[in-house]
Length: 113
Ligand code: AMP
Image (cartoon, rainbow, N blue to C red; front, side):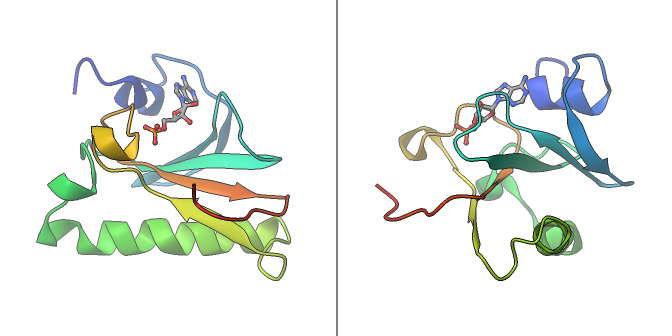
């Protein structure tokens, strides 16, 4: 998607601090971290939001959640706890129209606000 910031990060046109990537998923550090660990897990292919995901994306969406589990294990956060957030649409606060799961951890977190 030509004007999509996260597509440009995937294609490395725009730099990001990449934590991990494989054939279908990229994980990079959020530029304005809200927690000691704040990563964004995105599909490499452009899906605007969870509302635009299709049945054919089932495996990809599952892989994104399993990637979160893997990150938590690697960062020793599985037992401490971590938070996953996927904003969908303006009212939810989605600012970038490329599906992303926020991975937040490393501090106590309370209500969702
Ligand atoms: P959301 O509000 O759910 O759409 O979250 C978008 C997130 O992307 C925010 O937490 C931003 O700080 C983050 N963000 C925006 N631009 C960049 C960038 N160039 N590199 C890394 N994270 C970014």
